[in-house]
Image (cartoon, rainbow, N blue to C red):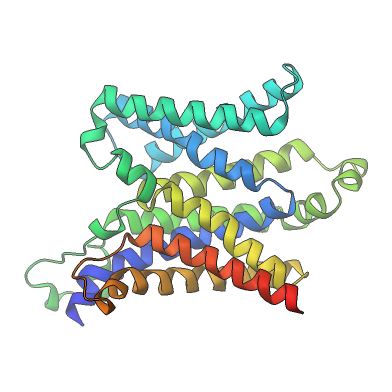
Length: 298
């Protein structure tokens, strides 16, 4: 049991918090048909984070989130410019921007030397869940529960904060965002501040993507933004139920995927483990396939 708290508890907690934040905002992105925008955004935050860390020398949550938000708004503004002024097809504009931003971010990793730290390309893509070890040190058995929790890696508190912020944004604009998702024409006709609502949704998405990118990688962020909400949408048409189902599916994917990554290879005689973030993402994808098959047979 002691090994679980040291080796497995923090990765499971971090992955669960990131998955919940991404899945919650993903529900509205799915309904507004902006799932690909989330993919683009998750890649676009990379240069902002890298530049912010390189300039400040800090890797704290405020610096990382600020860099990610600036890059996300810059990428969104560039996409809008290309589509409206340059008359570039929206899908092509997204592809151009997110690949360019991601490539620039990788170059910045090399130029700044951050590629030799925890921000290397491997961690950017697949995260570093396996490296999140909870070492409490000697005498930990004499500490209170709150004192022990204070020794948790910083990534846990950062992801918890982002989950709270994302939930607060979505709750504050829940009625307006729901109307914008289901009937955007009527939403504009009634005089809703569509620009403000889109900025709020963009902020929530950028927060989720940036926090997830730092800890669990781009792959898991995109998978959690798209797969649990899409799966939930296949199973219900009620928005409140969709949000609840997507959260359950996200947490279930984390648990099943993590166990499969750690224990799965051992069933075939291998002493190695699979990449946790990749396995969790694959599990979420399989859940979507299963729901689609169930919907087709109904």
